[in-house]
Structure formats: C-alpha cells, structure tokens
Length: 377
Image (cartoon, rainbow, N blue to C red):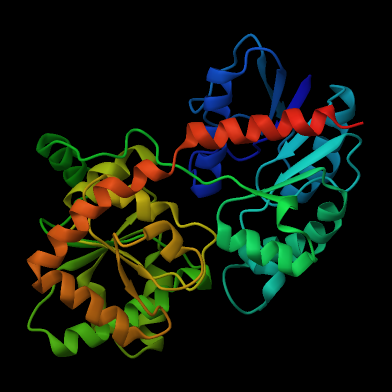
C-alpha cells in the first residue's frame, strides 16, 4: 500500500514536541515495515538529519509556503499525484479536500475549547484560528483518529460526540538519548549555554497554557519568603517578553535570577535535565506532557500540574501542584529544594516511569490501525 505521512516541520532547525513525535514515528515505522511504500511530505529542506530515505520511505519536499497553503494546496495535490491509499496527518490539521483515506493525530483540542485573540503570539493566535476552522471539518471525514492520552481521548470524544472506540490512544515515548549524562557532557553543555553551577529548569514559551506568568509570580513569592534560591534557566523565552511580564507583575528585579538560553536543540536537553536541581512544568493544560518523562529519564525530579493529562503521565513520580495558584507552585519548589528525602524518592520513582511509554509500541499500534483502515471497503 502507498501511505503518505505529513511531517511538514520535522526538517526545521528549531524542532519542538510534535516534530519530535513525528520523527520517532517515522523512524520506528522504518524499522518494522518493509512492505508498504511510504511518502514523507516535508517542507523544503533546512536540516535533513532527523530521518533518511530508505528503499520504501521516500522524502518528498513540497514548496515552502504558509502552513495553510502548504497543507490545503500542496499536500492535497501531492495526495493525488502519488496515488496514495492513505494519508496520515500528524499535527492536528489536514487537507479538507483529501482524495484518499485520512488519518489524523489530534494532539489536543485546546483551540476548540476557547480562543482569546489577545493571548499568545500573533503566530500562535493565527494557528489557533486555522485549527478552529479546520479540525471540525476533517474529523467528520477521517477514517481514523489518534490522540496521545486517555485524558485527551475523553475530551475529543465528548466534544465531537464520538464513541471512545473512534479515537485510538497512541502514547508518546522518550527518545533513547534522554538518560543521565556524564559529568564531562554536563560540563560541556553548561559551558555552551553559560549555565549557572546550580539551577532549576523551566521549559515553556509564550503560549498562555505554558503558564509563564504563573511561574514568574511563584518566583516573586519565593523571593519574599526565602533567603536565597537557585537561578531559573528558561530556554526559548525572549528577554523583551520576560521584561514585559516581570513589569506586569511588579517584579522587574527577578530578571537577575533568570537565565535565558534561547532555543536548545533536543540533543542537548538531556545534559541540562541531568544537572538541574528540579524541573518545573506547571502547565495549565496539556494533552500529554512529554518533557515530564524526559526529565525523569535523566534523573531530574519533576514538579508538574494536577490538571489535564499530567497526572496520567507523571503518576506518583512527580510532585503535583495547582498551576492556577502561584503559591502552590512556590510551595512545591521550596519543598524540593529543602527536602532531600522527597527529591531522592521522586528521582527513584521517575527512573521507572518512562519505560511505561514506548515509541515502538506506539508505532506498532499506528501500523495496525493503518492496516485495519486500508482493509475497509
């Protein structure tokens, strides 16, 4: 069979969560399926290192263009040109006029639950508007729907009035390079990003769900209640954005306690997790929460939210807090900084948690669904 996989963003230099999940899916399918013919549709190449073509996996660069045009025009034309039997779109949206069986991965439907045109960056707001238009249309036509957690499965089926069997849960996994790194590797990465000797780690961006403002408020509370505390390392946040938020909450002095690194490639994150005192992930809403498992796999204790999918992913191996309450976040930070027993307990439990989530198993489930869909008349 001729199977297409939309992986538009995997060759961009600054890859993020959904990009890495698509890369892992393709790599594992390459290992387990030598019978079907695959066509991997990407944006014109910037960095071709994530995957390489094989005898039955062909990489097809489509013209670089704004994502809606790339998807609705160029990808839709490619479906017809390459005579696909099935197209799998991996990042929430798909061509509305798709002339083959369509499978979509809905990582989440946050953009359908609410939309605020004043929150997030311009790019994020426009993306949410596009998804809000596209997703209801393609869900009606999809021959198969995947999502990444039982929590999100419930959200999707309730929103669209679907039976739970209509949405398959395919959990994300942890890439093999996420493991405790040697002291030499830690030192190398520390020097690359000029990291403090001791630090806490927060991964987020300007998307409101990542709760950057809540984190900053919790730091302000921590500053007022503690004699001292470690710096907080923040990848992927711009200084102008940070200054503005600190001004909004009346705590501009916190700038000196925050270390901005810019974008950090996925390959370097394991060495940063490995030396962080704690990993802070108090999102307001997630469909999965992959960094939780990445940090655990590297031996870093995790503070995360008691909402949405995060308890499902973290289990009893993380300290759960209320992300809507900065005081709850502050208490969590203080507890892990002061109580070595709790830290060690979470580190030990965290070592076991990533093994429950496996990309190979997810790829096998995906392939089985492809085969079942292709056998339908």
